[in-house]
Each structure stands twice: as C-alpha cells, then as structure tokens.
Image (cartoon, rainbow, N blue to C red):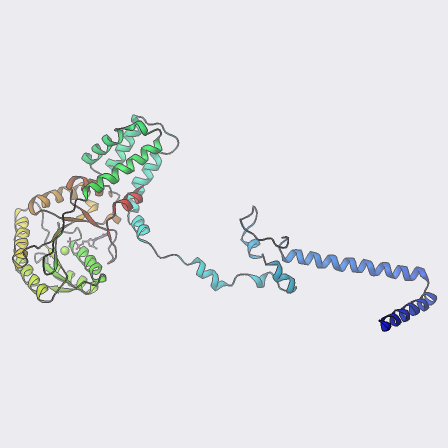
Length: 410
Ligand code: GDP
Ligand code: MG
C-alpha cells in the first residue's frame, strides 16, 4: 500500500513538471486527438464483429427460414461464441465441409411403395390425373360428374361389368355425401372393397413333401419370368426350390428356364424339347421328394387357350402330379398380362372353368395404362391375386396388397 502511494506521488510530480514545460492548449489538443482515435478504433472493431455474425444479435439462432434468407446467408452464420475467441476466422473457412453434405444428399433406398408407384406410373397417369381433373375445384355432384367417373373407369380397363356395379354402389346411400371430395373418398372405398372381396382364399393344406405350384397361362404373358422371380423370393426365404420345365412345346423354353434357375439359385429338371410334359412333371416331383425340396415350380406350355388339347394336357399334368403327391398341386397359379386388358379376363375365365385356378399373378403392370384390369379381375374371378409384376428384373415381382394398390392409384 505504501509502495502504491509513493508511485502515485511520483506520477503527480512528473505531471506537474510536464505542465510547466508544455503549454495547456497543446496538452488539451493532444488529449482530444487521442480520444477521437480511440472512438474510431472501437467503431471499426464493432462493424467487423457484426459482419462476422451476419448481423445477428448474440444468442440468435436461425430456426425457421426467414424471408430473403437464402442458402448463402445460412451458410455464413457462425455461433457468436465461436467468433468471440477467433477474431480472424473468415466466413469461407466456417462453411460445412463437402463430404458431410454428400452424406446428407444421398437418396434414400427405394421402398416397396415408391416402387409400386413407379411401376404403376402409366396407369397412374390416366387414373390419378383423370381423378384430379374430375374432382378439381369445388364441383357439385350431378350427372355430368358421375358420367365422367364412369368414363374414367372404362378407359382404365376396369371392365364394363365392374364399372357398372361400382357406379351403382357409388350413388347408393349418398345422404352422407355432401361434396365431390367425399364422393371421391367413397369411390376409393368401394374400389378397395371390390378388390378385397375378390381375395377369397381357400385354406392350403400341405400334408407331406414339397409345396407344388403349377404355373399356367397363354404364351408370352410372363410365366417363365414369373417362375424365375418367384424362385428368387423363395430362395431368399431360405427354401430349397426345384423348377420343372414342363413346357416342352416351345423351342428354347427349357433353356430360358435354366437361365432363371441359375440366376435364382434353384435346381431344375428338364427333358429334351417335345417330350411328354406329364412325364417331365412326374420326374420333377420324384426328384423333389427324393432331394427334400420345399417348393416345386412347374412351368407349362401356353399354346392358345381356345385349343381344347392344351386344357387336356394341363389336366393330365395335374393328374400326374397328384399321383406322386395326393394333395398336390397346392396352387394352380395363372399368369396374366395386364397389357392385354380385357383379354386377360377372358383367358382367366376359360382356364378357371377348365382346370380351376387358385391364384393369379398379373404381370407387366409397368407397361400399361390399363392397370384398372386388376379391379375387374378381382371382381369377376374371385380368385386371389397374389403377385404383380412391375418390371423384367428378378426383384420386380411384388406381393399384391389391396390397400397399397388403391393408395397408389388415388
Ligand atoms: P411365357 O411365354 O409366358 O413364359 O413368358 P416369358 O416369361 O417368356 O415372358 C415374355 C416377355 O415378357 C419377356 O420378355 C419378359 O421379360 C416379359 N415380362 C414378364 N414379366 C414382365 C413384367 O412384369 N414387366 C415387363 N415389363 N415385362 C415382363
Ligand atoms: Mg415360358
């Protein structure tokens, strides 16, 4: 304390001596200049600090996008605390590093529903766009509106019969329908109900041995391809799969099937071209039982369904399979080509009458605007639609799910 008092005294003495040598005006002028310089320096520091924080008050965090705030301003935002300690950090240096951005922008893996939607894009173009057009604006429910809905259903290949019954249900009990939008919701519910009612499934009994699925359908609908895709699905489930090449009529059909068997990792039983299909089926079943297979997929010929002998040939194959395994075939799966529209329905009815179908696979939905046929088929046949094909690749076969299908259409 004593030391401090002495130091202060010496400073005051010095000042006194300076006051005697320097005139008072000069001393005051110098002090004024010093004050001005100090104010200037402080102002410059303040402006620099504001620039670095993007003009934000300390503690501010950009929560929601502001008007006029573009990407650049968001990028230049730095935490105020960080600036306080790093006066010389530049805006450029604080940008998010490139690799981090790439991770953020990576597309999510394509899900089941988005694949279904893209597979149905042609049908959606007709149906969904049509619905949007019909129900756009606040339309009142009148004959014109109903006629437009009916026309849309027919154009999408729902079929005359199913369209008529859908229209009847649509105008039934309309007391709770106050506007066009609730009518649209009713249409959606009625379509879903028609599809679901068609999914009548009989209980499947597999007593012993492998599950046998006999695949039928006319030429070119996608039987062989569907067998390949199904085989891959079963293999994925960890099952042992054997494919039987009972389409001996078409040259190179066996070869095509062998390629699919290899692709999916399944075993195959085939004879030479032109061999008796029932004999191939018999051998196939024998091999499958001996090798302890879980699933047997039997490919068959598809010459025109109007030829009586094709139906007889299919019945003979079915009888032969039953000789080896009394409860087999467990499924008779008919493959239908959606691009053929109403023709698919005619084919299915003929096959159903002749050999009795238990399951349907609808292929090539990706290649047609006639996806409405799915609704017509479910309504008319009352045979469950189990699979839909939305492309040529091995994983382009989806299990048919009515809710998802209708969701994709609307
Ligand atoms: P099969 O005569 O009934 O055995 O018919 P194939 O299996 O040989 O198929 C005929 C053609 O249809 C082939 O070119 C397949 O690639 C094609 N195909 C099968 N399923 C689909 C599908 O879901 N989408 C598309 N775009 N093509 C398919
Ligand atoms: Mg084939």
